[in-house]
Image (cartoon, rainbow, N blue to C red; front, top):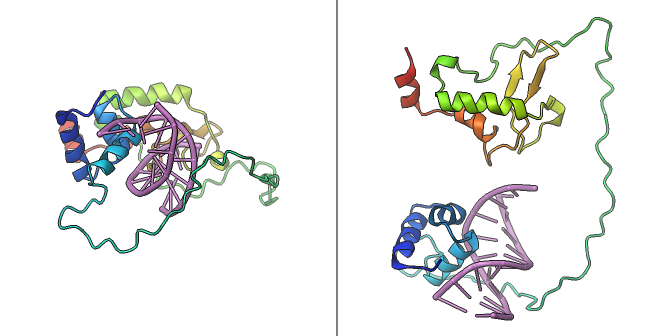
Length: 187
DNA sequence: CCCTGATTCGC
DNA sequence: GCGAATCAGG
């Protein structure tokens, strides 16, 4: 792919709208975000300001090694690795799970206001779910709860979450629905 | 880890 | 001019 006037136009427009280089690259197709960024610079619109030539204060020399220091590195002091740490909460007899009085129970929109597609993908995803426990959750893992917290049969989706979002793609779909979509669907 | 943009430099 | 590799920051 090459930078045809047409593609450059899209690039300019999107960059102007504040889209990220990767988004633009995805939109254009056939190019990587690096290509986009490179082009952006060559076009001289790296500085997302439009007007007069800014006052270029301190570009500062980023002193590049110039060569390719692909040498060894990374001492890697060995990780301590997570430790149980808290021996708290001894399994007292019948104690099951004192699910701190759950009132909120996240999203879980009533089925009738979830788009069919989204609902379908969720069910699909729940089969592939990694079924993580609270402890295993991290950023980047979907925190969509599945099942009843008061039961043994409770886990979190755990699939790769969308950047910035707390859920995976499928769950983001049912969690963040446009207001309009919900109203239109509501009975 | 994943993602952003910024830079350099061989092609 | 192009963009992969790499850097630097979130």
